[in-house]
Amino acid sequence: MIFRFLFNLINNPQVIEKLAESRPIRRAAQITAYAITKAQIAGRDASQRALRSQTLRQVREEASRVPGDMGEVSSRLKKVRETFVNEVKEGWKEGSRQIKK
Image 1 (cartoon, rainbow, N blue to C red):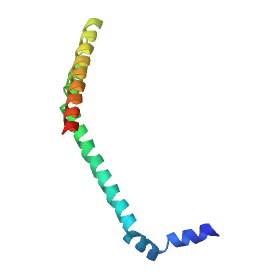
Image 2: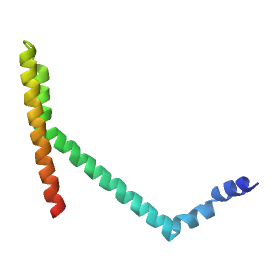
Image 3: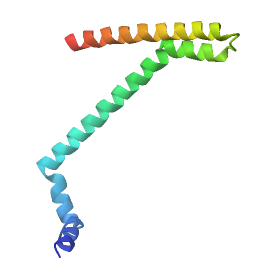
Image 4: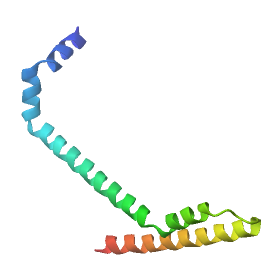
């Protein structure tokens, strides 16, 4: 009985219109739009950083070569690890600088 009443109330176009015009619903929509926009910008920035990443370039380069022996594979992995660690350190420093601003 109550479910039917609520269902009919929610499906009433006039009720929907009044709710859409109410201040709390409009504010919730603004906050949602803001959050989505911020997430898109952050995602775009992260993808651009990944594409500029030296580690990504190095992994692609190393993957295209055929290894001669295990020692060569080990040295390649070591170079990739060092590059990755350096990029993480630089990213950490950059993030700290941005927080201090």
